[in-house]
Length: 51
Image (cartoon, rainbow, N blue to C red; front, side, top):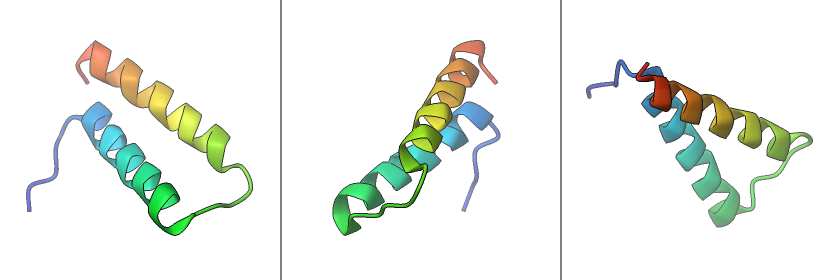
């Protein structure tokens, strides 16, 4: 398996997996939504910067 060297795309992949788990198995814990928001913002900035 080949893991991407682009940190932004890696964070986006993690965000997508967590979003799917939240919907499928009703994953929930304290502070989930702020963590998801920060993860999305950081991934977006890194993707735009090309890192």
